[in-house]
Length: 71
Image 1 (cartoon, rainbow, N blue to C red):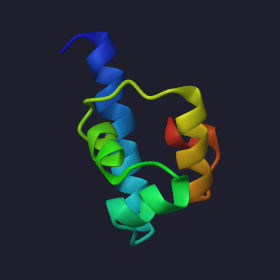
Image 2: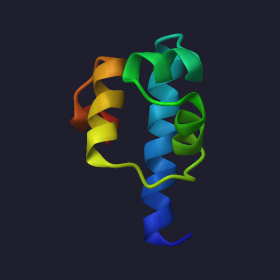
Image 3: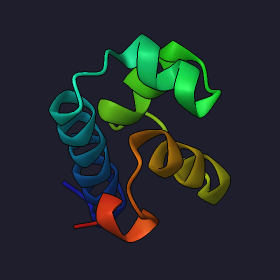
């Protein structure tokens, strides 16, 4: 796996982990983050290279710091 793809996989897995810990569906997270549900799925499957603005939206929706998304 190339390094660009690897970081997308790690980030997507972390978003999924935090979302499930909070008992949120992809739809509920997308609503809280003001993003489309399919976009959340694409992030979790490492199909999208997410922007910093959307990283911030997801962190806020999950009630974690941006730093926590990268742990």
